Length: 351
Ligand code: SF4
Ligand code: SF4
Image: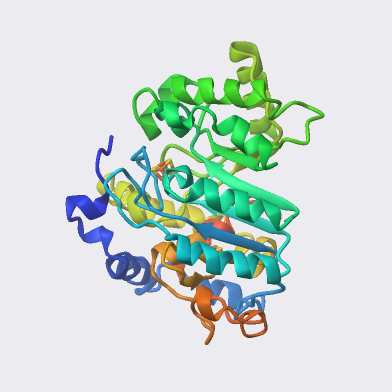
């Protein structure tokens, strides 16, 4: 189980260039597997184009109270990248004027940013239709100062989307650290207690599942049923939807794949499961991702690979909707993670 980020450990894979090298060479360079560009060209879907902006996803920092094995952010307590209030103010201007119907705050653990509550209060005033906060759940129980988060989320009508890799302690703790399961269960009960996740409640509570090893997620609807049954029977917990997300081969999941000698098999599995119908709805087509220091990316994965948007509008301070819409999306082999099977995005399947 990881206890420090790759960056803190001084690992080669903390460098995005090194990750991109791995993804571009080897089996993709020698022609064993087609590149993502070749694959989507077969159905005339290259270049992948951005459509109208619907979702603004803002990463408010890479600091996290956990160090999960699969983390694509390489987040952890040792990461110090934190969005400043100034950058948040620029984001607020864009939220007001961009026309996006969804605001999605992520991290790290977004709640650890010292300006998180201020930002939520200000953003909630804009009246955006769907205001998501991605919470790892354990942060709610990590320290007394976070215990009132369920009430705070409720006050601002935040849609809570939480990671929960399994309904059993063993599988959850293996991926996310000892004690994570018990804290997550308590946090879910706290959220239920204020009304989150109840069948007719407008307080949305969704869970995110991602596989704990080098395999692809199973059927999302079937898993949701299993999660609902087990969490209700064992702990009386209710939630709305389960999103099944494929692990993308970057950052700590790439490190795990290489260390466990699963990298090539996993890439074969992703390419085998390629579904051309999923391409048109991958999340970069309607989403823009903002990094802690205000730079713009096609998605959170491209942010971590330091692949900026292919547009003259590169930073939140020079956001230009017209220039950004219709841009060519920057792709590499990690994109196969979004088009495997029923597809995968921050909101589950896409096809
Ligand atoms: S996966 Fe989420 S909870 Fe785990 S270390 Fe990364 S950001 Fe934190
Ligand atoms: S990884 Fe990002 S750029 Fe690639 S298909 Fe997925 S959302 Fe789009």
